Amino acid sequence: MSKVEQIKVAIESLPDKDFVKLRKWFSEKDWEKWDRQIEEDSKDGKLDFLTREAFKEKQEGKLKDL
View (tube, rainbow, N blue to C red):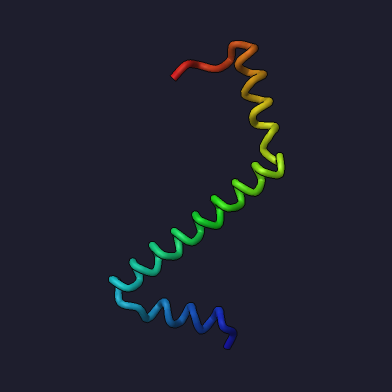
């Protein structure tokens, strides 16, 4: 049995309270990874197109004030 399969079996046998804790931990880890990727992409200029697009739409009057 692979390590992933072993983990799945272990997770399925958790009491509800522990499963909720694990799910929360896993979700937080996932969001941390996502945040790091966004920061890295921003630093590398991979998201610059979003700024250009926003400025263009602002100039064209397509944006609404919040």
